[in-house]
Length: 380
Ligand code: P1T
Image (tube, rainbow, N blue to C red; front, top):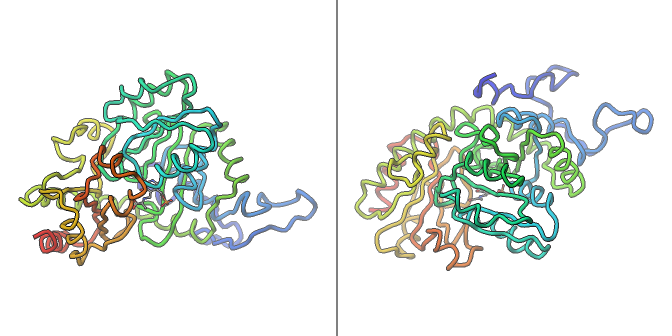
């Protein structure tokens, strides 16, 4: 089955044996009757498993070319489950630019549990090797990174991970499997904030993991069931519905993203535009190799790097909504330094480019003329 067909049909055979409903029913139940202890029809308690959630989990596995999917109550809950594979004394090598909430989870929660995190500029994957020790258990990659749009070579990371026998996890939230499938490039775990492009309509918070390996899936399932950070059936349904149009939405996000990136580049008030589709993006060649297009996420800075000016721009936008999050059909704008990445200390975030004038755009699927007109009037 090819990708567009999988978004609609992947893992969706016979989801309603009772009536044949085309969409899986929302099984809004906590528990399932048993004829005798253990005599059930595959589900016994909805933390352990729920048919609507299972339908989504099979679909996630299908679109990411994996074998097993797991759905959680949020993207961070999914990341949390991955870190729970580790124990005190273990070390993680992570991209140095990543979602502020992931950074906060690593440094504010898991460092207290005795896990060490190294934040490394992985644009040159060879930098990873310098941080590998006998305690390294996981390489954590975001690509494109949030919000600097750095591109990390997944194949190169996978080669290092295999050489040292450590797990490679890729946060595929920005790219989605429409643009890149990390498991095909050698990753062990793919993670999603399905709150974003997979859900696609800014109406649900949900996270996902996909793996190929049965043993790893069993360990993650044990964590999902033991820690209990599952998503509810209604939310699973919404994401499943969203994924059915992922391919056509992503196509338009990419088209609009390209047009907005080119417009920003032409505006004399703009200093830098971060978008992997530009030929002079530092890892454009890697992006070209591992991605099928360049997506609708763009960050930019204004000349003079003035905090107040950046705030004024985001406040002046009318079609773009000033909001956290990304990946919905509507265009959003954010100011990472004061919003999504505020939890990263200023001196740490500035080293990776998250300066005061940085603005992040999630380019939606509206008419491109309206989006560019809006940016023109807000930036001047
Ligand atoms: O918000 P949640 O579903 O828990 O997902 C966390 C997360 C994980 N990974 C990446 C790359 C993300 O962008 C996010 C969430 N990001 C935002 C809310 C944001 O505005 O960047």
